[in-house]
Image (cartoon, rainbow, N blue to C red; front, side):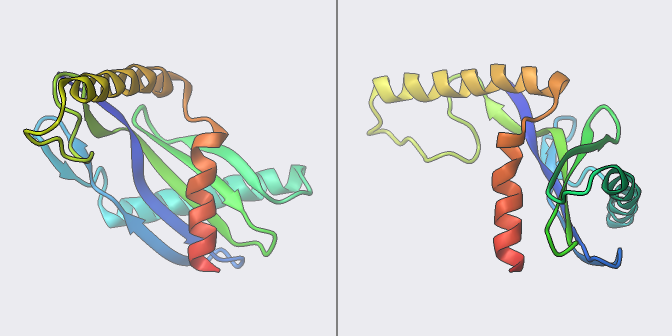
Length: 164
């Protein structure tokens, strides 16, 4: 049995003059095709990133401090846009797919983990499957409630260090 957990679907960097500087699109897990494909096409992600500019502008008028804007808006029941603004006015947007990555909750540890070959002990195999099951249970609570700031800060920190 497998469960889906949130993953990054798109990262965007918007300049201080509302010009797009960078867009990266990441594939998400599609259970019907049992493959990884993007949730939207590049034009649709570009329009979603442009729609966040209005939210940044509205929130900056009510708040004088720049920084973490948190959840900008929920796009649909699957996608949500989170934002961060630097002190120089550059805006970073992370569009999260709430069902984007598959985690095996059964006997194997998932698709991207360290491989457990024949020499893997039964104790470590059961602990890795227990960890995968715990991650799957935790992800089910995240889908309804959204992501916490602590889960997105490393994303924005990595984006800021990559652009700076």
